[in-house]
Image 1: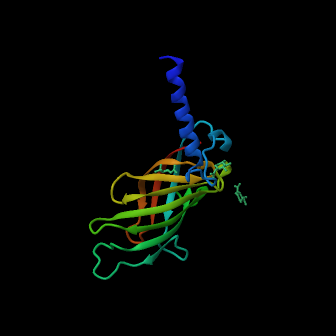
Image 2: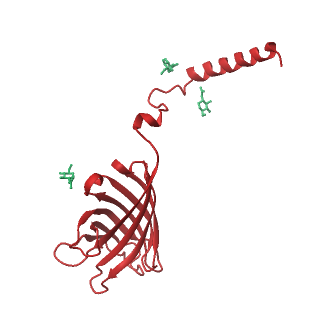
Image 3: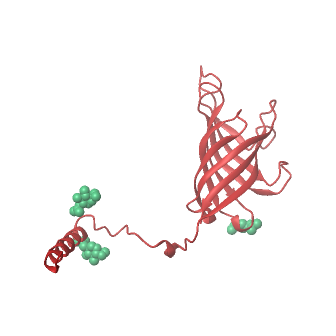
Length: 189
Ligand SMILES: *[C@@H]1O[C@H](CO)[C@@H](O)[C@H](O)[C@H]1NC(C)=O
Ligand SMILES: *[C@@H]1O[C@H](CO)[C@@H](O)[C@H](O)[C@H]1NC(C)=O
Ligand SMILES: *[C@@H]1O[C@H](CO)[C@@H](O)[C@H](O)[C@H]1NC(C)=O
């Protein structure tokens, strides 16, 4: 292919790019930037293990019903609770406080006990202080291991994605109080 056939092609590409750049898609509010500009280096995988305390009993419950089961509802379908549950390092409530799980869960199945969970893990410990991880998923509470997606995060956990595995450590059927072990696997920068 000679120079004479390459030149017109270059000219066409040049004209095309010029037209594209002056069209209505030439926006000023959005533009691609280099990942280095945000200081995004290599992605990391972090494993966190915390214990989640859902306290329904006592003077200061950390889970409060905001929507009781509608009339005629079977198995509590339709009920919603707001939570501000302590996250601790060990299974005892008296062990070191790592953060809190703030959000809500609702009974999203007509059969069985399957929750929709939407909560932010807010950490207060060390370099994680102030950073959050957002968990959103389905929790079949009587399964041994329940997996739910981590759909995002903030602070140290910007661009977070991953999953949690929840295992019931202790459940008091009289009060409804539960201690659940959460193993969090999260990719972030
Ligand atoms: C397109 O964007 C460039 C750079 O942001 C700007 O200088 C130019 O005026 C814009 N053209 C139009 C047609 O909006
Ligand atoms: C803007 O982008 C859309 C979607 O890619 C395209 O259909 C449209 O033709 C573009 N408009 C101009 C003026 O380039
Ligand atoms: C976490 O951050 C808050 C607010 O910035 C600060 O008041 C607190 O002392 C910090 N806690 C730890 C353990 O660093």
